[in-house]
Structure formats: structure tokens, C-alpha cells
Image (cartoon, rainbow, N blue to C red; front, side):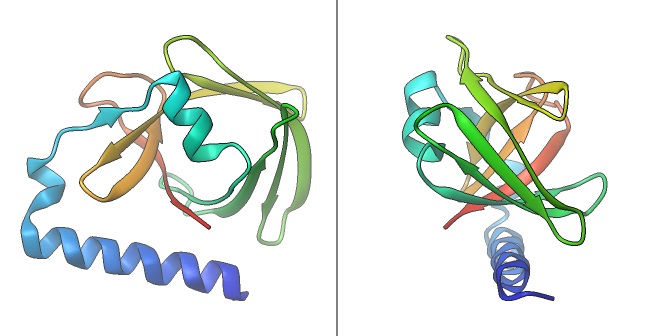
Length: 129
């Protein structure tokens, strides 16, 4: 496991332990980020992401010029573009496919989902570098 994956795994574990102690995971509501909050939180920063369905860890860099680069352990790198809609939904076009997600905060955690429904499945949990 490379150092970035190890850091991500340790951070997720500490977050889960913290939520279990306080019961915050079930008690806290999701707070969806606005367009400007997404820009401030993601653009120009590295993001480590864990896809909950596959368990895949990836590193994302959303650049100010509208480009994005992602890398996954063992799968290599891919480049594309990003755009943020008025409602805060971020869409990424990469490898001839566009995927859109809503970003939210819940307790001390950050994650994303495909919709803004309170019970929408979490697609990925993230930490910022």
C-alpha cells in the first residue's frame, strides 16, 4: 500500500471511531455544499476518495482551469474536465463519460451522492490533502 492510500485508510478509520463514540453518524444531517462551497473546498486541492461500492481508493486534483486528473491504485491516471452547476452539483467528464455528484458534509466527514435526497446512498467518502 502506498503512503497516500495508507493515510486515507487511517483517516477513515479514525473518523469511523470518532463517529461511533459520539453517535454522530446517525444523528447528524447531511449539509449539501453550495456552488461556492464546492469551489472553495475542492478546486486547487488534492482529494483522496474511497468509493463505497467498490472499495477503490483514488486521488483527484480539480484544477482552476476546469481540468481534473484522477489516479487509482493499479489502474493508472485519467484526465478530464469539471463543471459546477448552480445547485452545487459537480459534473466530471472523463474517458467519454460524464458523472455528476452532490457534495455534502455530515458531522466531521465529507462525501458525495448522486442526488440531494436525505437517504441517497453515499457514493464516496473523501478527505482533503
